[in-house]
Length: 272
Image 1: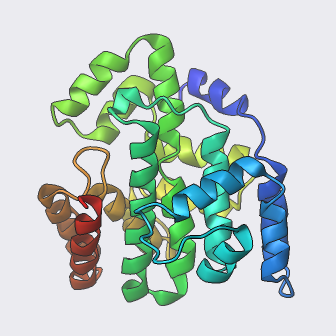
Image 2: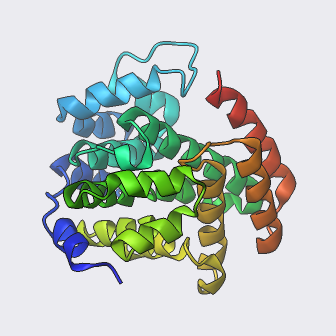
């Protein structure tokens, strides 16, 4: 159970910007078009700047420079831009001092982005109908680390916490020892606070114990768990973590070959 300090921290989180609400509502309209989505995003200059910076970075490796939101929506699609706007909005309203995990805000963003890429590419082989949804889940599943970091820093426990991670202890066990909660549990609680689709929060929370997830949720939960192991905050996409991810895929009964191919490709981009 999440301790009272974390509960208080989550309860005091500011609301998501209006941009998120509006883009979610617009996306549900079957008649929405590229111009309408772009117009919503353009009302938030900070999101526009972050979005264009991200799309023109080495993460995407696009041949042509993206100079406008409308161009970005046309190129990547409305769903991709919606997911990126939500992810960027969440990070923008939170203080991102992730030193307890040994991460800069840029490294954290890169890890979340690569988890989403791996989840989407692998899910296309596992269950193509879920490939788009799993990308947003993977983008958001690590946000709980921001709140956990804040609590550790406030309590002066960041140094011993980081030392245990660097010693190779299991991240989930260390988190629970210090805060009575894991990243997945805190991420899910944050999303419930912001009134996201309950299924989104549930699936992220199940990633801790995917084998106990119900029915159709089990597949999603396993994919989230496995990509978090592969692109871990400790040695992301290292050979050791890729092997661990493949063992979990075998345990879950999910196809290993497409996972291996996707991890190999992304590992090359990570080190580029």
